[in-house]
Image (tube, rainbow, N blue to C red; front, side, top):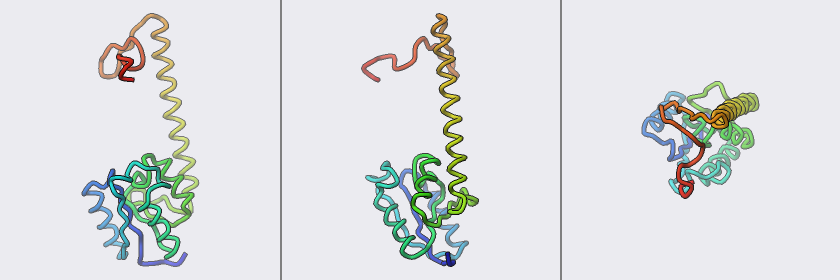
Length: 162
């Protein structure tokens, strides 16, 4: 890919805190990039990455102009890092993530594998904790939560709230 002084700067309202905008602007200025801005509306912020119109336009712009897609953090693209990496891999465009500068188009598959391992690790720890709590219930004991509350069953205390 030829080097370009252009970039597509993407912001998602959910994560568009003022400091994120400042950080993205500072990065673009320090890199002497000329940005085309793509900002998602509040109506589209909770959609899947593939369904967000501004992100779709940003990816198309990057493909047509052969430029990189820039954002402050991976969660600008999706709710989880794993989902964001999967989206970036499938988009097939160059990208710059300010908070994760070592991740790029060439190693996104490796980063995706590592993120998937993290997801699996969290799931296995959660499952083990639930099994431990259920074993305490089976033995007639109550569980003491990290907040210090006595828990005698899992789930919502009022079934109508579940």
